[in-house]
Length: 318
Image (cartoon, rainbow, N blue to C red; front, side, top):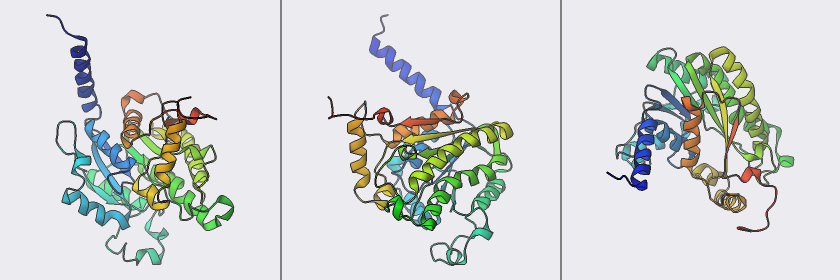
């Protein structure tokens, strides 16, 4: 019986799909920073679930109610669909404001704000103790950090206030340190932590202001230091993904229209002229979270079709 090349390729693809389907079976992941179905966080959650992991989400309290309502109403069903047609479900969804390490750090004006009144516990410490109560000690294998915010992101650095700058660094980079500190003792052997960065950490991106470029640079530096500290203490790996721009709802909320324009510009000047998708980033996160990346830690992986390698180009396709 003669087997065609196409049949052999299809057979390999099915075998690879089966392999990835079970790659993370028995693992539990926490993806922090999911607020809707369009961003990197949701795509990463789906990819991890497709590989067999049980996935928990952590969502900013002011967005929690709308996220849960849309999830329960079925608005996210298409984004939750797996290759076999089934829908993945989040094992738990936790409220999390990663600006605050513990309850004593929460100002009274936040605690009494109408968008927070429904939540008694939403700090990083609260998340850790809730995980203990729900799943017992040593319950996590994968932590993905997709949290970023800067109240003055539209301001040039020279016009950014000290408070705006520090808020950007606190929310976008120190929150990863805070999660690592609290969740480190809850990690199982050979755990993986992944955070999300952007090329503005090392190159000038006009319009990406308010201290965000500094926050991303700090995040990449912290990735290297945490890889040593968490590696020596818990045997965990820590890596970072530097992704090309994607016009998520969060990006559009910060600067309407800028996400799509920047994504097109980056795609035009990339060696492979494509715009990234959340699925591209999710595939990288799956790899870094899996045993296949067991020897990779302290690294920043570019997911941008090579745009980070370019210094100058004249015109597309030249």
